[in-house]
Amino acid sequence: MKILVTGGAGYIGSHTCVELLNNGFEVVVYDNLSNSKEEALTRVKKITGKDLIFVKGDVLDVKALDKLFNEHKFDCVINFAGLKAVGESVKKPLEYYHNNITGAINLLEVMKKYECYNFIFSSSATVYGDPEVVPVDENSKIGGTTNPYGTTKLFIEQILKDLHYAEPKFNIAILRYFNPIGAHPTGLIGEDPNGIPNNLAPYITQVMIGKREKLTIFGNDYETPDGTCIRDYIHVCDLAYGHVCALRKLLENPGLVIYNLGTGTGSSVFDVLHAFEKAYGKEIPYVIGNRRAGDIAVNFTKVDKALNEINFKAKYDINDMARDQWNWQAKNQNGYEN
Ligand code: NAD
Ligand code: UD1
Image (cartoon, rainbow, N blue to C red; front, side, top):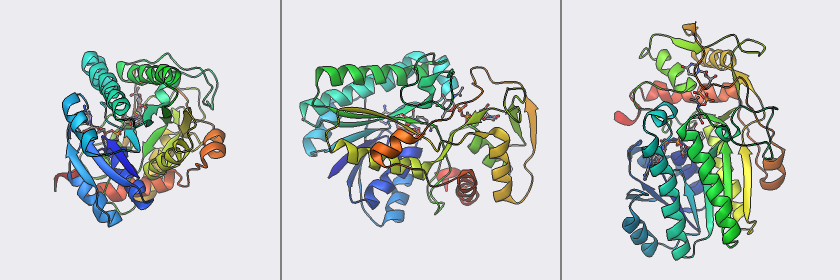
């Protein structure tokens, strides 16, 4: 079975390629490398001992997509291609709406033309906004996103629902990721952010290698046990495997399905920091700063639906995530650069 993985050279995409190859799927990666390096795919091949096809291209390039589908008969498309920096999306909304939404529409149109009806979409816990009740589940209210990035996820989800209503042939899995961190246990692939990391885990590991002086914790006055925000961190390898579970489900023609992918456990910023300190064997310097605009106090998910319907259960905890992310960062201080 041949799977098109758009954005497959990126952080989650590269780990998903490993899981797909290890589970016997053929993989074609289509990525414009705007936020990734081809080296990640060389390492995917090294980890798995298997080959994949890489085509450099943009999901905004309709002609190139047509050529790609003309050359390959795909059984499913997993769409990771998208821009994901929250702060940047506030400054460049049109770029975000264009890249993420038009890119998804282009893919769906070419899929329809070539009669490929299985689609997996990378959505996000951000679609729940600031949830009234936690843990959330797939029926919790969505909306109230606080930035254009989050809103692209919300809009694409709606487009997918409308498409499925009009064209029931489409099988669509909307996967709402909680907070992916960690790296492949080999330390060969991991997250390689450009510039100053916006997210917690890569910022911490850059402090650990001395690239940043200290972590700033964005607020310790939330109504949580230690005053810092709580999230559902999930090991990127668990998350990647979740795509194999979703893919198997799509092959049963379920129509449109939605799954939250998390661990079901909420961890505070201090919990995460302590997990990294455990991996490091030393204390990590930090200061308490102001709250970050748009942050919500608590979000984590129920895991029952993913367990019952696609047999997905995360196996790693935050200590494993911290160990593996530290291993990746220690071995690749400049990411894929050297
Ligand atoms: P990433 O930036 O590492 O990967 C995205 C990949 O898409 C990159 O390789 C980039 O080069 C490629 N890309 C971007 N625009 C493209 C275009 N127009 N054409 C072709 N390729 C393009 O990000 P990631 O963390 O791996 O995230 C993958 C997906 O999951 C994204 O859609 C993201 O919004 C979503 N997501 C990520 C997180 C997270 O915390 N990392 C959480 C929820 C959802
Ligand atoms: C952020 C995005 C969200 C996106 C998600 C996954 C915002 C407002 N939200 O979510 O849309 O889907 O990433 O990529 O950016 N923290 C610090 N210091 C830091 C960095 C983070 O204290 O230097 C704290 C944050 O306040 C938060 C927690 O760590 O409480 C996790 O932050 P982060 O990794 O950015 O993830 P989210 O805020 O959940």
